[in-house]
Amino acid sequence: MDSRAPRDYLHAMSKPKKNADPNYKVIAENRRARHDYAIQDDLECGIVLSGSEVKSLRENTANIAESYAAVEDGELWLVNSYIAPYEQAMFGHEDRRRRKLLVSKKELARLWNETQRKGMTIVPLVLYFNHKGIAKLKVGVAKGKKIHDKRETEAKRDWNRQKQRLLKERG
Image (tube, rainbow, N blue to C red):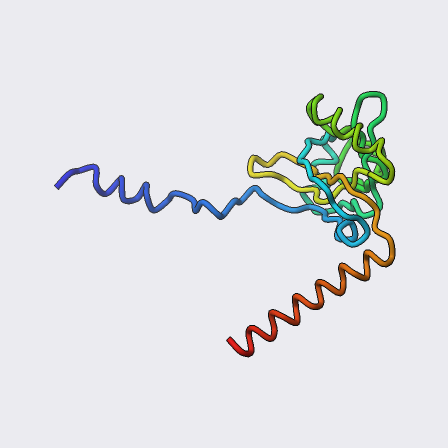
C-alpha cells in the first residue's frame, strides 16, 4: 500500500465545495429597480471606498435603493448611496458622498452613449463582496417603466405563479 494514500484522501476531503463560496456576500440590493425600470443590460464594476466604508459594509450597513449612477467628466459616479458611518473608525467617512465606479474606457463609452438616448439611465442593482472579498456593484442600463408597463409585468408574474400552481396540482 502506498504511504501517500492517507494524505491524498485527507486532502481530497478538505477541498471546499465548488458552489460554496465563503467570501461572496450580498450587502445591499435594489429590489425596486426591477419594478420601476426595464433592465436592458447589466455590468459589474468596482467601487472606490475608504477603509471605514469597507468596515461598515462588512456589517451590512448600506442602502442603494435611492441611488443612481451617472457619467460625468469621463468618469462613472455612484450618487446618493448610503453607507453608515463606522463607529470604531478614527477617521470616518461621509455617509452619502459620491463614490467613483471603476469600469473600462470601452464600457464607459458604451454607458455614456446609452444614457444619451431618451429615457435610459444607469441604476445600481446589487452591492456585494465577490469571491475574492472585493466590493463590487452590479449596475443596469434601464429604461423607466410607465404605470401600464408595471401592471403588465405584475399580471405576467401572477399568471406564471398560477400556471406553476396548476401544474403542481395536476402533475
